[in-house]
Image: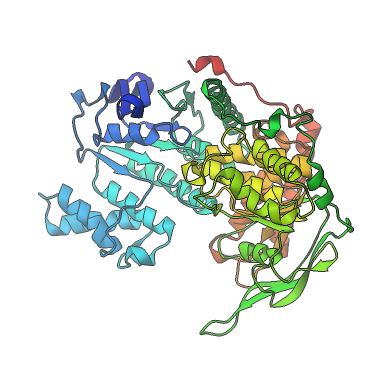
Amino acid sequence: MDKANTKYLEVSNLSKHYGEGANRTDVLKDVNLNVAEGEFIAIVGFSGSGKTTLISTLAGLIEGDGGGVIFKDQEIDGPSAERSIVFQSYSLMPWLSVKGNVALAVDQVHKSMSRKERADIVDKYIDMVGLTPAKDRLPAELSGGMRQRVAVARALAMQSEVLLLDEPLSALDALTRSKLQAEFADICEKERKTIVLVTNDVDEAILLADRVIPLTPAPNATLAKEFKVDIARPRNASAMNSDETFIKLRAEITAYLMAMKTESDAKEEAQTQLPNVIPFAGKKDRDAVPKAYAEAAQSVKDDRYLELSKLSKVYPTPKGPLTVVDEIDFTIKKGEFITLIGHSGCGKSTVLSMAAGLNSITNGGILLDGKHVVDGSPERAVVFQSPSLMPWLTAYENVALGVEQVYPNASKSERCDVIEYYLQKVGLADSMHKSAQDLSNGMKQRVGIARAFALSPKLLLLDEPFGMLDSLTRWELQDVLMDVWTRTKVTAICVTHDVDEAILLADRVLMMSNGPNAKIGNVMEVDLPRPRSREALLAHDDYYAYREELLEFLEAYEGGANPSEEKLSSISAKREKRLQRQRSQAPLPAPLQAPLQAPVAAVE
């Protein structure tokens, strides 16, 4: 029986808009979907495409303007215990314990059961999500991942027929998210429910779903071509990294999504009336780095450009000194891009903040271009997870704040060139005079990137710069970052939790051991040609060998473990063997800058 053609949960010509007249926003248009009983559907879309509106309609929390949703031959006209939902935000009662939060839902839904029966259900699902040891804790005492486990336990304990998941893991860091994805996969196998997940994470969709269906960008978003996930269950994220079906499907879906976004952006740009300004993009030789920037970027020392020598950081605590980072030694060449990856608490951001001069060094030292780092300076530009813009200033004015300080000998015209050049390069040529408070989160981070590059820094430091953004927006900004970095070749260090981001950006990946007393546990050279694009990277056989090494490294340090040197060496040796085997079997794919083709014609 073909599940896709079996009607259990049916969406028929669903449309939805908000507001009227000049304030009208069209969100969904003619959405059609059939979900079979016991099927797991993943709907993948960009921020603002209407994913939450769609899932809320399935839950009966909102009504569509046209069309409708039918569940078991009955039209949905409101919420029901038959359909439980897990949102991105945890929505827990802060004064209730883990057990109390789950029991609150159970007591409402299963009123006819005895007290003992209800208590047994609560205990069963708390145990299923691994929270039995923490069942008496309050939400404030839990990590983000643990809070989301409570929300999942609460939804499962309602014992609904349909489980609706609204980006339940997107607020978590990449490593915690990866771990919970594996737990979700296990829970879904045990429960065998009908599940609809909306997500912006392609890996998450493939790991969990029977079918993956992209949602076209807003306005008037609708479901596009579907992709069947023909991978046997149970699925393991690490094992899938070597699965040819996964590799091919991942590349196809990624290319399809990016092609959809490119087409959408082109339509939007054609309809946009540019402001009455002449952006730097319109000037002659628009790709040439401004003269003032080039002069400020000159250095006297290329070899051993950045040196971390016996670098240590110790914090005083009531229980005595706590060594977070322990005697790190490392040298970085001028123009090299380094990524730092490791589990939470391993000292990644501590190293970055010391390199920025924002955190004092306990022992050892840092030399940049032959000079000791002792305090903050514009020559070390930092892009944080939150861009920290002045909301009352425009994008242009936010970038100008730093530029006016860094180029004291440049003319006003030259400083203007620098500001407009970088705002244009990050895609804000037509938005540079909008106030920061009117920009989306992704656009704000673009301003932060432009501001950092415009300072002509000797060292660019990025502390999980895309960590607060959804996966698909993160792809876009990674490409933006790579494009600008390719032109400037500024020496850069990026802290990340994202394995794919670490490989895409880096010449070398530094893997941190667990803290306290964290050190550099392993160094991986990334021998992939530049320039790089995400689409082509996913089609490159070598990429998955690097990805496998990082995943196995992180797995080796899981739960605070500290693996032996032999274990780490074996992980690196495995990667080398895989590279040699792949290169002996077939020629390498086309250069990494060659984009994959996606069937954009299907998106109409």
